[in-house]
Image (cartoon, rainbow, N blue to C red; front, side, top):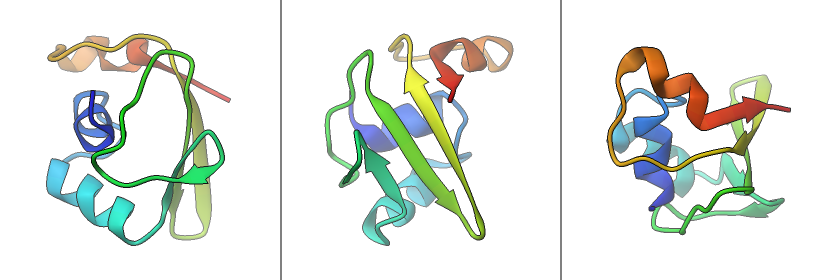
Length: 79
C-alpha cells in the first residue's frame, strides 16, 4: 500500500493531501529513511512522522484498504 494512503486509512494524518505534503516536505521516514508519498509500506515497517516540535514513531501491524474509525488504531503500534 502507498505510504500516503496508509497514513490516511490509519488516521495518523487526517487527509491524503496532507500526508502527501508531509512526505514532500521530508517529515516522514520509513525505516529511518526519508520516504516519498508513493513508497510502499508493508507489515513490520517503522514510520516516523514529525509534527512541528514532536515526532511520532509507529510500527505497521496490519494493512487494510478501509477500516472503521474505531478500528484504525489496530493498524499500528506506538514505539
